[in-house]
Length: 49
Image 1: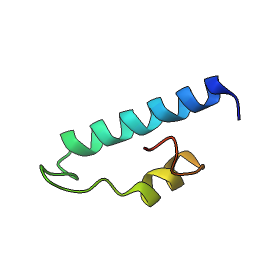
Image 2: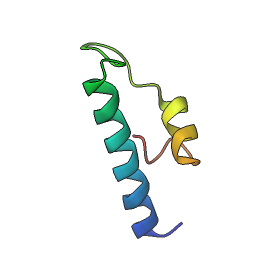
Image 3: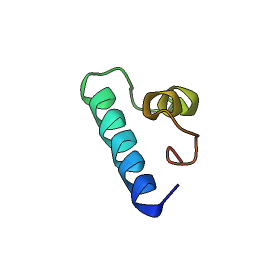
């Protein structure tokens, strides 16, 4: 996987987490579900971290 691909996946994860916060799907103190985010981008948990 190229470095650019990782950056794109990382940005997708960032955008998804941000949307989850704004929609109150994630609240203060909640843990971010790495597995769910990895499934969302169709990759491993590395871009999530």
